[in-house]
Length: 114
Image 1 (cartoon, rainbow, N blue to C red):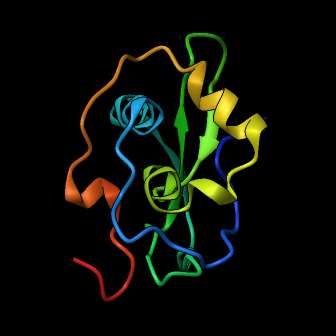
Image 2: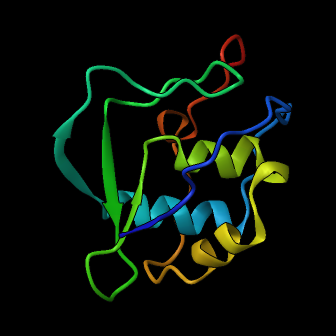
């Protein structure tokens, strides 16, 4: 099982979301996700205060079972790009679902930012 964007950002957050090719590729893959059957008794909290949902999700890249991620995957690309390792950016770049603009819900704004 391979993960995608299962990171712990430093807390440094962009004032405005970065909406570019990578963010839009992740959005398109996210919208084609499969939710895991396992629900957690909690959720992830990003260093900036953004909350995830309480389960993991699979996004595919056209081969096999896909990549395991969480509901903050779009948020990380939009608000914490400097904290994302190059190998994770390369995984996003390889996604094959096209590109779509993110909604506010998918961006998951940092706590206190709207």
